[in-house]
Length: 297
View 1 (tube, rainbow, N blue to C red):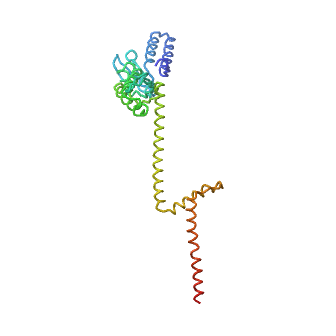
View 2 (cartoon, one colour; view 1 turned 90 degrees about the vertical axis):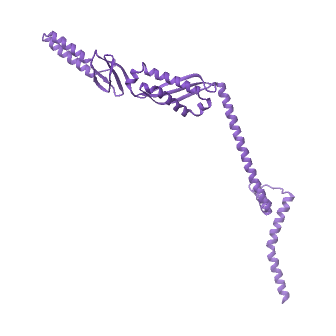
View 3 (cartoon, rainbow, N blue to C red; view 1 turned 135 degrees about the vertical axis):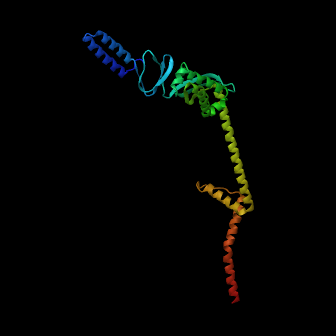
């Protein structure tokens, strides 16, 4: 409250100075002194609080009331404004250095705590310095949680750990009039040697997965090839057509000359011969029918 502009107190002082000055000019020095004393006493009475502030007022050493936003009137000498509590959400960074995890891995963790004072009376009366107390409570809780958590879970499941920290810290600070909004782990550092080892392990895992996927693909290809072989075994003409198609596809773009093995040539020639016989058969039948008709005549 020191150094804050209080317009009401300034107006009281100004009015007191004017009244005391007029009385002094009139020769009434005693009333002027009394007016000056009362004006100064009255100027100490108004206490102005901002919208986000709450003041804890003690009267004769005992809690009296909470001063809200605006002008609050007090009794100087009897009342004492012990502390002003900021009711806005605040952030407090905290960390844990070289703390062992459950699997004995040293880690350095940086986190931030978002909290708000919801009860000004408890925050001032129950705790000597609630701001530093909240910070220490968060730091000790973080160390305890790290000691009960394995490194792999800390890396892969940060959101759950954040929620766990928030619940534990809030349970501690709720009796102090403090509510923890959230806890977020900003950074986690491990020894460089362990980081390299984990990187190599992750690379080996990715290599293993890629080989497994390749093997599964080979099995699928082999299965499809087996099914195709069964179809070709039942239908030799389909196999010959496939062979002709493969030959055509291999030379259609390059315009190259391909030497066909004798067995494949014989098969293809046989297929072509069968097709030629099929086309020539009707012509021979018609010729024979014509000759037979002429002989009958």
